[in-house]
Image 1 (cartoon, rainbow, N blue to C red):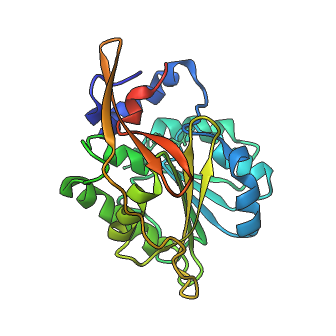
Image 2 (tube, helix red, strand yellow):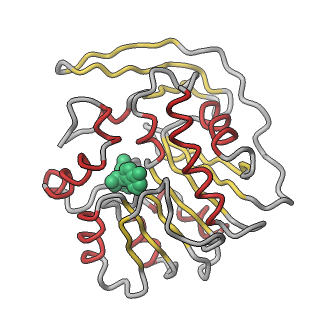
Length: 260
Ligand SMILES: C[S@@+](CC[C@H](N)C(=O)[O-])C[C@H]1O[C@@H](n2cnc3c(N)ncnc32)[C@H](O)[C@@H]1O
């Protein structure tokens, strides 16, 4: 089920319907990529005993793969009660794993509940209407700030870690995180993932001893290209990425590139 308009990704009912219809016969579906792409980095940075919250878990296998890797203290949340039911049944062998229907803008956890928060392609949902990644609208920022506040609040003070996996490149995501978290979380590292189609893992922390590792991302605005396919327009930006020494194509509306 692909929406006629990106705005539907912001609608809880869209996700509910999509998961009720079994996500076009995909019992599970992985946005961007799976755990195998960043498991080495994750293992080096997160000890197995830590408590993990996954925001907008969807029908991804991420939590199951983490569990199989020895991370057993995991709580998954999603706005869709259907996907929470389906995935909790799918993962019934992961005994201690927890599942809750919850909105990531209003987390029903007390302060400092988790050591680690992970999101994969969930924050991107709140940016689907953006016309330019270079100038995030005030509306999008206002929708992301409560999530930033909640992530910061539920993370353990001075040692909390936040992992965000997204298509969005550092020169877009770095300033956005600054505004979203009021600079309370610092970027410890960024890993580029994927082969031909790149995406990124952002590792942030509230550990005061960590200095932001990303100094500055200044770029010329990119060339914008509209690719038409089957009556749909994919707006993309093409630019040189100094960080990764490569040409980089940013899919401003990558959700439109979903393949059924
Ligand atoms: C693009 S999918 C990503 C799913 C999964 N994280 C993955 O990597 O495959 C976005 C997910 O966020 C969920 N979602 C959307 N809005 C949400 C909200 N306000 N709170 C919690 N989850 C939300 C959707 O139901 C959907 O499962």
